[in-house]
Length: 108
Image (cartoon, one colour):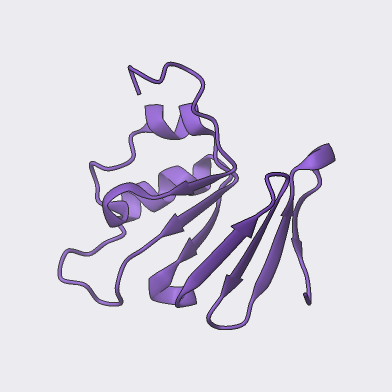
């Protein structure tokens, strides 16, 4: 973060190190300002990832969280303006970045 400065904002944050306790500081979350966080962690993993404290930090920042241990595989695509997200469970979501519309669940 020190090298990147303050310009690291992003719509999506892929949770560092599977959401371990030391992976996502409050400073990181404040700097990135993600709308969505994707966490890659297996069900019942021996490390307890993602850590509850980290998940609470994301929730407190207003992030929508998608975890592989609950949503299954997660795929995303973007044209640079819109981010489309789909889970293996068939949930489809579309993020419209223009005009601050926010997440919209969609059928397509």
